[in-house]
Length: 447
Image 1 (cartoon, helix red, strand yellow):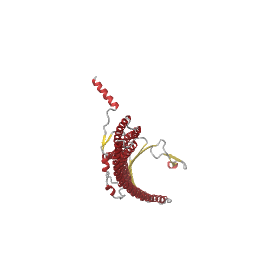
Image 2 (cartoon, rainbow, N blue to C red; image 1 turned 30 degrees about the horizontal axis):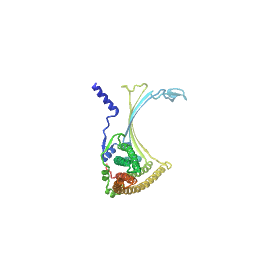
Image 3 (cartoon, rainbow, N blue to C red; image 1 turned 120 degrees about the vertical axis):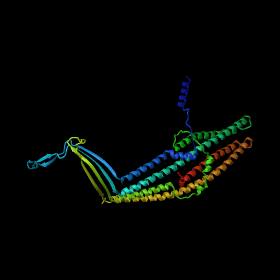
Image 4 (cartoon, rainbow, N blue to C red; image 1 turned 90 degrees about the vertical axis):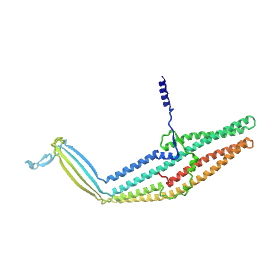
């Protein structure tokens, strides 16, 4: 009976979900490394590289020897006849005799070896396959950079909600204590009802923010999980501290970094685009060049009135042939010339876009540095404002309970403190995010 109860409760706990999944702990760097292996976009970008490698080999294989085999079997249900003059067989002149020249059944088996000797478009295709591989590799790097930024943003948002909840809970406890104290003072006739109502208004507003942040916390964790590439509801634990991270991401050296655009991934992708358009011009021009190929084949044929091709006495007749094919384009009514000119125009457009992208990248670098510098300066300002707001709130709280200041002044000081607290948290997040954006633009991330 005891064993049955143990089994029963074990099943009950399993069904009810009592056994919970072990949380996964991540520092920010661990989260980034994990996402660069498991994020779904990263995985697909890696698959694109594998596809590009396969396409590169397919293009290469086109110019390598090709061997094909074929087996043909024919059975005349009604044999075709040819007409011969009747006088050949002793008949009357002017008449014809139907004759069947071939047996009713025949089978042919042959193998052909073909080799492309020269084709201009093949040479262009080889170069194009290499460029396509470079494009896929650069797209993977861009995806990695975007995922890295997304992880930093999501990780920071989780820390922001966690810190906000801690601050709001602390503020809530202080307000509830103040409300309880002022309520007793009012009941003893030593305080006005307005003072109680002012604190209730402040507490009500704070509770609304508190409940909202608690809801956002779940969404923040779920967004982080999606970015990491794990199940939406997998429990995760963040081991880094927001303030420490913001200090780690504060680096004046980044502001002095080289503004060169050659390492920027968008610049490299734009270069790939120009190169691919140039290859399309060469491909169009190659259409006017001759192509040369050669082949050699060999096979066996057998004939018979009945299907006895696998008999030991069946006769097989060998055959073999070598050939060379030269195809020379002569005149296309200016079609090839028009296609080449169209490709040249497309190349000119790509060059114009390349120059514009280069200028935009330079502007983005300057903007990212400016925003990062502002984030560092704003953090120092918000930290100072928080210290001032805390002192002002403490002074007004002391004055209020001593009867020197009004409840309205206290509420203003408290509201100012709450705003300063959130602005301080946001300033730390801004430093982390702006540093990540600057690193991505300068492509200073090593993989």
